[in-house]
Image (cartoon, rainbow, N blue to C red; front, side):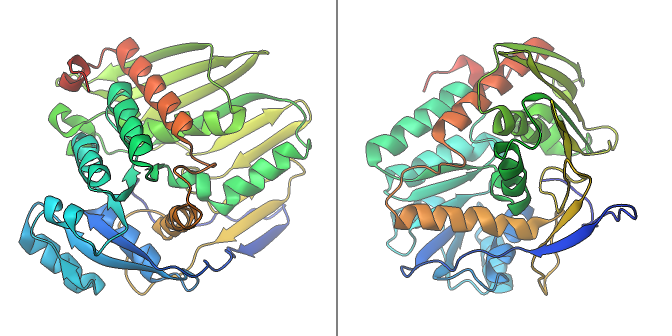
Length: 365
């Protein structure tokens, strides 16, 4: 997640329409969430669900954290009925259906594995795992258990992304040949970015948004990856520039920066024109269409303050997970296992080219 306050830019020369984010009410069958962790992203995830008026039969029923006192405080703040003394205890319980893993990156694999092996569905925050080997192993476990597993790339479920996808599929942009993404925030001093033992990496923390966007648009695996970056004294990348080359002369240029704030837009260019996702592109509320009109997307309000920008949008991935589980699906069609494996492979390649090596890279799973 990224910092910042949620503000929609105004375009005086373009027609602007505010679109309410309508989601069909979920069919009956209560989905009970267990929250794995008590950090800021977990707080926002629960807040997004609890404050959404059309969440349907979906409830946050339990929480567990490394420190029981923090879990108890979290439960009190969010009116959660059950606090478990450990992750293992919650995994073994009959009181949850799906776990939301919002712990730090190095714990994604082990915690997701714990819940899958205990018969629980899993939504794991991005990145799914630290590398391809872990991601492949986790997906294999989910398939063997016939359980739902999804990487929490919440951007994919934004109503704006869906609108852009519809515009592309309509042919209004012509053949898409170029994608440009800029994503930068001055957060290089934060541990989850700068410290290797915390899974620190600009490409793992922020770059996943840019990589997934190129993948979302081209719906293909690149044939060539070129990456350059800047490392800190701990051997962690703080800045990355990535060029992805695809078949048929298609290309994506991605700039990821943890030292300065960039103009965080994403532009899709086709033979008939361009469409731009305005800042903040990672979960946006404003799209400039190829014909110049501006479409605004209004997120629901909450009486509680969010930690990260536009976090109300987290509810859309939660709804996707609930609907998939109800329909007996093991993966989402909007964020598939294949998508996660390609993302993991790309992040491995970028880290390799810029010189970031994690201890986990030497292990087998």
